[in-house]
Amino acid sequence: MARIHILGAGTPTPTPDRFGSSYVVEVGGETIMIDCGPATTHKMVKAGLWPTDVDYLFFTHHHFDHDIDYPCFLLSRWDQSVGKENILRVFGPKPTEKLTDDLLREDGGLFAHDWKTRVNNPSSQQLHANRGGTLPRKPPEVLATDVSPGKVFSGMHWEITAAEAEHVQPYLDSLAYRIDSPEGSMVFTGDTQPCDSVVALARGADIMLCMCWDDQDIMDNNGEAPRQCGTRGAADMAQQAGVKTLGLVHIGPSLSQPGKKEKGIGDIKAVYEGDVIFADELLVINV
Image (cartoon, rainbow, N blue to C red; front, top):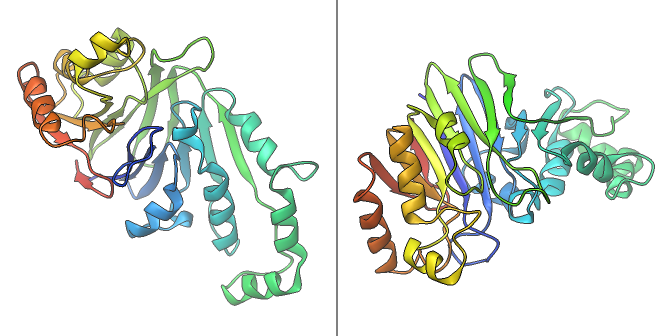
């Protein structure tokens, strides 16, 4: 059975209950992260996960609410490693490669001062040795790859495919991802407006986690409907794709309020025939 950990179910607007986007998937004996928004590393530890558990990270796009914790996650995973872990592989649309290099490269990387200190400082070396590591301590090594729509990667018992998500092009490329395995099929829309490419990607999936910013009527009236999904937009895509379960994520602060939440779920169920999950952070979904 595959499991999805909802680490971030919110938006760029911080609230006490939701902030940013991030998910961890346990499938086929491997652990995958989708997006790395605000406080992802802290939330994953609260969820009983550990940075070194994750060997793969896939970015839908590079708005800060989807990637701002990337430096923290990279450095935490490296710092807690003992040199026996797999090399982290990171995939996403441009500028995934550049962002990774800008953070970690030895000559001028934004956090090179940190990892160089930990490699060379005697007390840091001792901590590394006490955790079971061997000296000399190695610098961080990350394999980052810019990707586009199509088959992206195959794990031991899973494969992941990307499709274009219509969001803020041409300023940033955006992708949706589908993970297929014998344990189930999962789709992560990232940020998108309703579009044929994501519907095709999600066809027949067991679950689709779809952004749902606000009540559709409010979005239609205030001009926020283009380039993102509201309640009916998410419902329409899920119904067209025939997914079994629709998980609502990237939920805005307005839609989270009592009364509005219930109305939104009711509007969705008037269109979509499957099960609906209004995602809370740290929720675990069995697929």
